[in-house]
Image 1 (cartoon, one colour):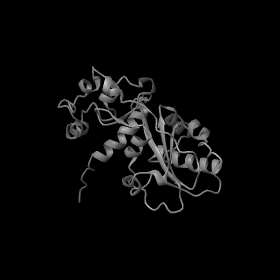
Image 2 (tube, rainbow, N blue to C red; image 1 turned 60 degrees about the vertical axis):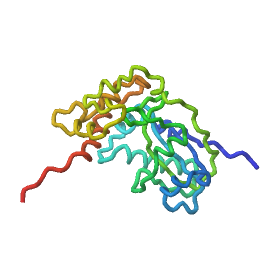
Image 3 (cartoon, rainbow, N blue to C red; image 1 turned 90 degrees about the vertical axis):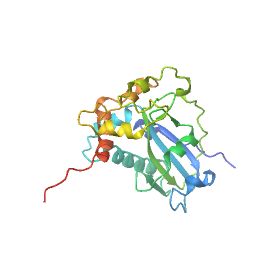
Image 4 (tube, rainbow, N blue to C red; image 1 turned 135 degrees about the horizontal axis):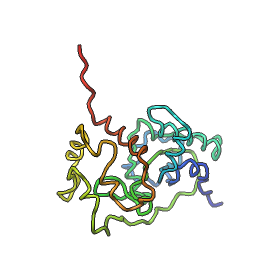
Length: 234
């Protein structure tokens, strides 16, 4: 039996989608498989993420004016990539999309994800400046990826600057208090409306930190979901 080919990632890397992990569907735990919907006719799941600023730079260079420019760019890029590397093979992008995929569980299996005190996934190389961008089920036969062997950088951090930098004191009790975080973000004068001061204070992977425009875009979208619409007059 010939060895299965490695995932050809050049197009994805160039687009800033520079983290990829291939899973055989048959090897996934049941609690993940049940979140994927109907996978009849598919053999693999390909998890795609980004690390650093390249993806945002590509999105900005393309000049998309859509409501969700990153997701739209990712879907276009992944679709074009499949046409190049697996022509004729069936695939379905399940994230971004309506399917509630267990991305963090997949990240744990891939070795990508460790929880930071402020509840963002952290990696020793990228810090918290990375994200899941796509999950694709496909009728492909690429070589499954080995889990990345990385330790949680928070375990050896004595100073914990993220805790002292949080103006809401959301981690003062030894665990993350989400209501404190949300209350502070919703304030009209909030210093964390379009950023996260705790995240910015973390030194891990600081060379990959998003610029102000990317932070404002990401946190602006999340703030909009947290803020109820203003009442309209009858």
